[in-house]
Length: 335
Length: 98
Image (tube, rainbow over all chains, first blue to last red; front, side, top):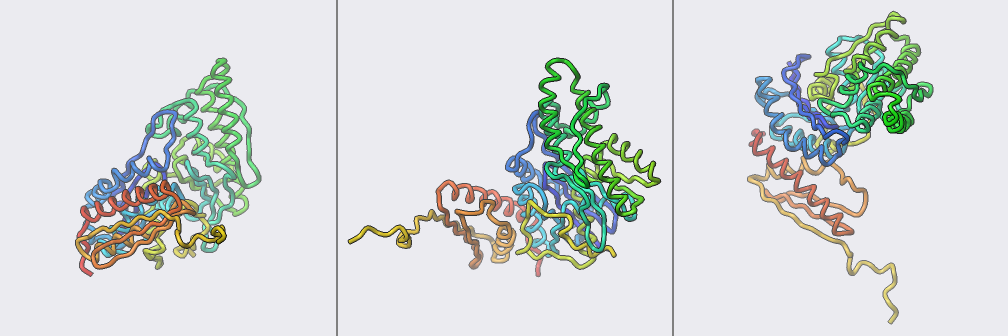
């Protein structure tokens, strides 16, 4: 029996989760939500996490019904992500690991998403679309690495959505992407936007600039509604993601797609991906908001896999890093 | 006698220095704090360096910075981090026997 506690706080969510042999025992989380029109900055986000982290840790242990002695390993997000929040969380993880006399494990945040997706959905060897506010990658496993087949060459798709939400000043509660999704359902006019797939990769910063300008012009003149723009943006962005996912599937001969990351909660994206999968006779896997949005249990799960295959992070090597490629980690727990 | 050359800087390093000593209830706890606080690099690449060390049950930190404002930012940040580590130790300590 192996029990791992995982600490996650690389963006505006702070979550601590406990997993015992594939069972999620607890997974409490708090989100730092900024007023409409504002994004979250590193120092304020770190301050938010710092204020709640010890309470969330208490909750994680209480809800799991465990004592620190029951934990076998302390996992935390080494990166990638925002510097100040990552440090805040790593400090607590390092301290409790030492207080409790448990080994420490630095986990790659992207791999946390992948391993949680695999655990929850039981997908065998899927092409993974990892889409969030901070990351957009198409990943496939090959020979001990999660290889990046395609990715954004500038901003993440979730970042594009979040920044557009600020332009039209919609609420960030529970998340800007969720509110765009609800508004998109009421859109009726398709506004043509740039479509920027570049081979295996995608680009979103140009679409963002375009729609920011279009929003000012068209909303003022009444040519379309904000709902129409939300609808058009989703259709464009998601079509691009479906295209590069399909391209990777064709390269790998894959019959499974797994969507992970906060943008993976979007039902329209799941619907569009589902249509493509059906056409190819492939299966689509996705998780619900408990696990596709950043959470502690996903770090615990990746930590569980890593710990059982012999990984440990020594304290002097436990520094956090804002840049951490998914393919930098040797995936020793898979053949 | 000629004016000092531009390469002559050793007599006065011109650095801003700050020293901080924090007592802990035990040497073990001072070491725990040291090992939690030392792994991360300074966010700022140049102009500041700090050294952490433990002697007895005391954690010592020594800063050396090019400018006062750089020093202030680093010290303020360190104090925030230190207080989080101490709070964690109070809430989830004492350390288990080794």
